[in-house]
Length: 126
Picture: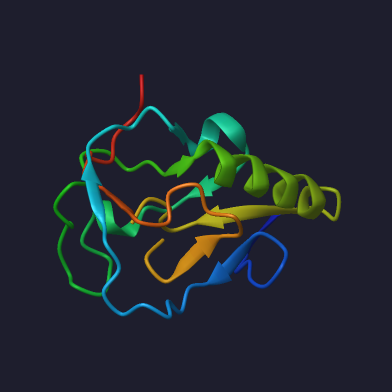
């Protein structure tokens, strides 16, 4: 049985902390989910514990917009996470994911949507 680990990816690897030089960026809103995938489609053996869907989180209640306990990522982020998963799996570990879609203080290196706020609900994508 593979052990589960929590992975925080930072720096040049996949995800970097986003400290914007512009405190008031122009942000566009969209409910277009066409550039997103369900994380387990890219990383089938990921362990999901989507805490914002339930009450076991820092606010003690389900967060609006979480209609199903699933994780959504942009296609680019999912590919990057798959590469990390393949690496840790070769070492006998698996990724454990607590949240992916709402991910507000980290951003993908070369983020494809740096100034977009997605408003679609968290649920399995068709």
